[in-house]
Length: 95
Image 1: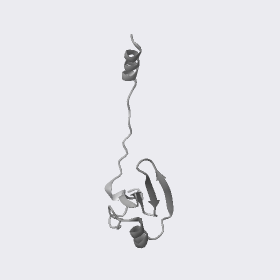
Image 2: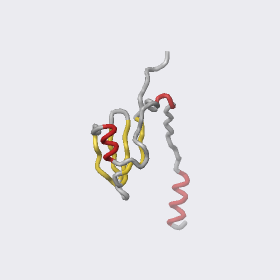
Image 3: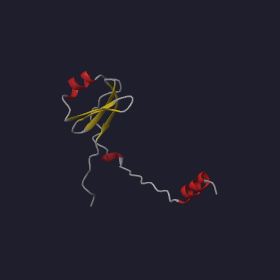
Image 4: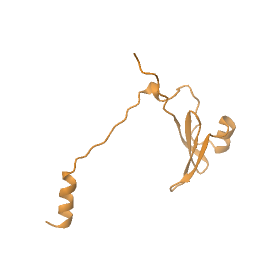
């Protein structure tokens, strides 16, 4: 058997598994929380929400940076918002 054929046979024999994590909509953060909008500038975000708790430097190509606030994170590309994400807010278990 050729090397590529042997490699393919070995790869097909390996078990494939993935874990799916599902977070109920009610636990994905405060739905009434206002988030920065797509396309807003970093300056506008600073004016509306103040300084972030943590500012992570840009990585990758194109460079993407992230600002973390207590309840959400904001992702920037070229100084403009490309996404805003609420942080998971766990709730007490139901009895």
